[in-house]
Image 1 (cartoon, rainbow over the protein chains, first blue to last red):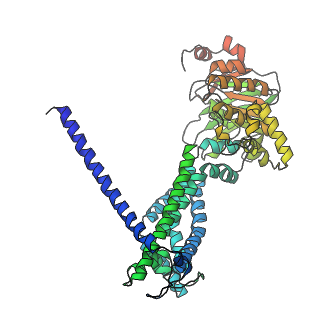
Image 2 (image 1 turned 90 degrees about the vertical axis):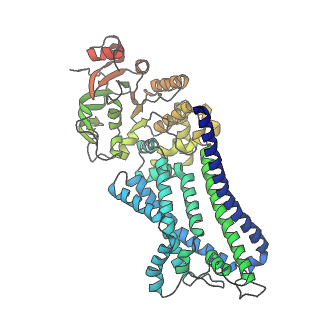
Image 3 (image 1 turned 45 degrees about the horizontal axis):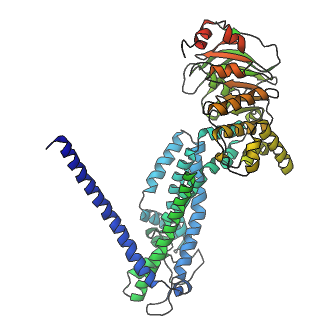
Length: 280
Length: 261
């Protein structure tokens, strides 16, 4: 066999192996999505959005309590996590250039990003739930915010650093003070990227279950009081899906479907922002 | 040895025993440099890469202060004071001494907002005044005809040459005393380059101009005075024609005849 033939055969083997691997990976993804869509759509109806949770066997049961709870918890988490994350990222990129402190924060934040979310749930349980004496929506939002901060911090830092330094210099050369350079020029230049980071951060925490089990816990009925235990789609899904009742299991599928679509939507919007920016 | 003439015109800037050291450097990157900058004239700085001409230019609006650890020595006199003084109000200084960069630096906003940026920084909010001054600046920078129908459009939609003229409009809108040009045409095509050069010659009626260029023909075309720098020193400053035709220093002659650089 000539060297050339050997090379061609080797190339074909590697190509085939990697193509098969890619299809196996994608196969699982589509399998999951397929089952989810199939069962989810079947379980989906208008009543789900109108009715609250009910004991198994009741006709009029729904997910309104979980949807509202999920939205509230994520909203509060966003309200805490986004400003902190963006401002910390701004510090790293604009004020901490080359400083030891900034480097340390960057490293710690990277470690936090890969911390198991259940650990963060346990942490919030210890510092908020135990002193308060009961589970609460606030505790859930705090746990999600803590998970969100390092993600948003990192993307903000990266995106701001992509803004060319000549653009900053040009603004300084017109006599702009630093905060105006940052807000009016740097943020504007990095807008799409920072926004994408925020959306991906929200999408990431919206699917978390473990930290909520420790913090906001659950409530089978409608509750908009953040200082009380609160339902969320993820925890509701966990409870319903593991229950022996068929109607609860169907609601679990619906919750899974709604949550996945929400997260998929956020991801798609985030990517569209980036694409539009690159297209320019 | 160096041959540095005195200029007959009024001096807008006067550099005295100026030294500059980058944070990363142990020895000065610009050494004991003295030169006058004539008012309402174009002064070109030429020299091989790394000779310190851009470093010198960026000292005049204290651009080096954006990065920690850089140090200045000596004097740069402007309006009767040493602008290297630690107490100098850099924001004020930079509105008086503007800068045009090597690559066009259009901000990610509309054409109008780009030109209005410096004006708004000065607290001008009146819409009609802003409009008038933006229009005047765009006309003075010879880009009004191309820009007038799309003032609200994103400035990044303009070509490189147009963006550079937009940056000039933005810089002259705040009516500075001095404009620093840092190789303003090195990223542009020949026709855009010609446009910028014509603009430089017209603008000197109102502002004093210092231009750093790699292109000796450009220095010869646009400037009244030319300074030749080498290894952080000013070797020769003279009237442009004289410096190019009858250089006094051997190094200058070797550089302009292409023996090195």
